[in-house]
Picture 1: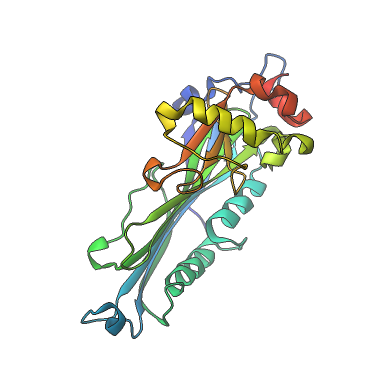
Picture 2: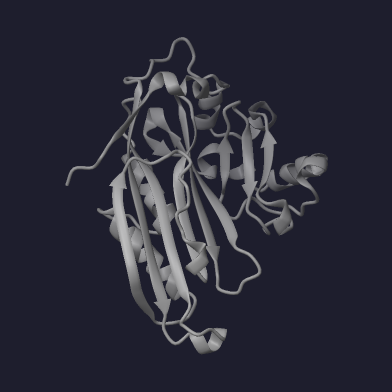
Length: 285
């Protein structure tokens, strides 16, 4: 089956490449100046059987799942298969040959988590050209519950690609929905993802929470009150376009829901003593 592929001109992304993580003069330039990717979009609606009585409705309630995932297939000539697999794990908790199959399996699992047997009402999916900021197509007027998964490039330099997978779920009759973001840091020169433990030495991990908590207190005017006693639960962090390291906590993890996602930033030199050799090479130490 042929996928529709999109190639982004390097010139359109040049503003993303002017950052602290840009290559030194003695490093090799990118093999290619293009990005190629394929988009996978899907939607499915389920009727939750025998739920009408429990929810005091005339008909059984409806749960809708939707996803729009942009999967890079080549970045500046680099192989990104490991990134592809990690995106699948974060988005659908599996690595499958066909993302569409994984996508619809995830929809069904989310709908089934409400606690009822399901009847599929409609299902659509396609592979095509995505937007970097895809619009949600869920018809909320008819959805009593929703699950939305969106995946796209968060930031990009010649060394580091950061990918974000956003999960939104609204359970029927809940006070509000919940959005969580998972970030993948992909080191292009070595064709691999970098977990928090690849950036920080093992013997330094226990020291980081105190540093993060202290920085968050100093940023209280921007972040609001926080209660940080550990590293982010999922090891979430990013290296931004200025080369700063952000530790990322999800809503409710260390602060109130209203404060949203908490980003606690550091300049790399502030954490130099805690970095692994790989991280020191990335930041030029």
